[in-house]
Length: 185
Ligand SMILES: [Zn+2]
Image (cartoon, rainbow, N blue to C red; front, side, top):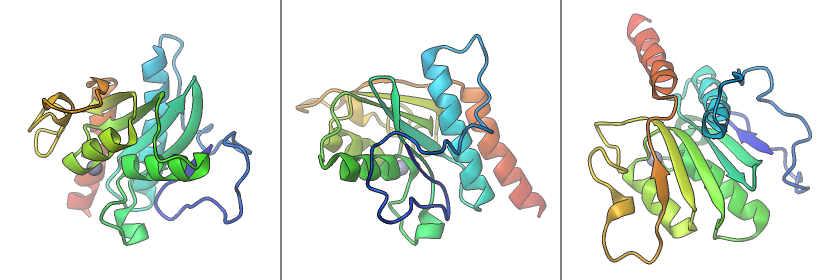
C-alpha cells in the first residue's frame, strides 16, 4: 500500500509488493462496526483526504482496491506536486499502474470522497477501472451524474459500475471544514 498525500510520496526504490509495510491510515480510519464494505473503504479515502487538508490541499482522498486489498491511497496534491492533474483519483491510478506495470486496472474499485471531475472520470475509462464509489456529489463540476455523466455516454467500449453518496455527509464535511477554515483565516 502506498500513500500519497500532499508532500508525502512513496520512497524512491520502494518497488516491493503492493502490501503495506506500515499503514499510515491506521490512526485516522475510524471504522464503525455497522460499516458496509464500501463505507469501510470510503473511510480510508477520508483519511487520505484529511492528510491532504493537513498539507494545505483541497481535501479529496481516494483509494484503489482490488480483490479486497488496498493497492494505493492518495490525497489530492496539485499544489504540492506542481501538477494540475494530481487529483487523488489520478494519483492512485498512476501509482497502481506503475507498480503493476500495467496501464489497465481491470478488476479494481476506486473509492473517492468527491464525485470525479471530467478529467478523472475519463482517465478511469481509459484505465478500465471496474467500479467507482464516490462520497459527496459535486454539483459544480461532477462528471458522474451532477453536471454530466461520462460513465453513461453512449458508444463506449468500457462500462464502469458506479455509486455515489457513500458517506456523503462525512466526505462533504471535510471539504466544508477546509473552506470554512480558509475563509476564517
Ligand atoms: Zn479530478
